[in-house]
Image (cartoon, rainbow, N blue to C red; front, side):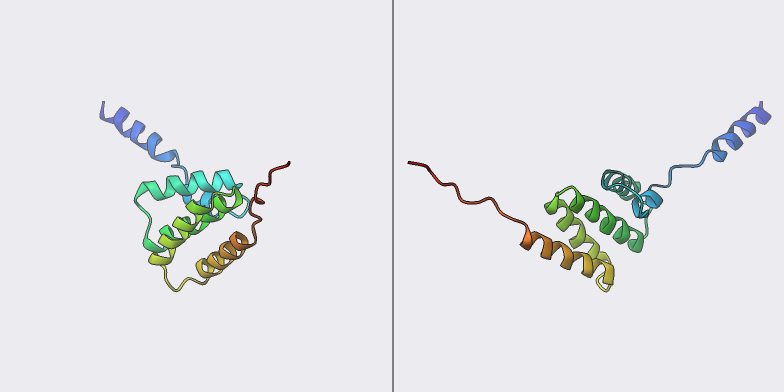
Length: 113
């Protein structure tokens, strides 16, 4: 019986767990894949502070790509707290602020007479 248990344990360990952080940080990941994989990576609770900051930064980029600006801003604020001297975070904050300011707003409503 112990040989069977050892074999099952070996089989289980041979199956690789998904590497959510790799998908989160991959340049070729779509916005949705980036958001989902970064969220899963963050939910594992096993990331170091620099990894968390990177996951938050990349998830904010995904949120920005799908126009979820408030979520992007929240992630960037948390990333900045974790890595206050990270240049990528500062640049992304600037890009987000600039694109938010340049976004067209809805024109005022006019009434026809």
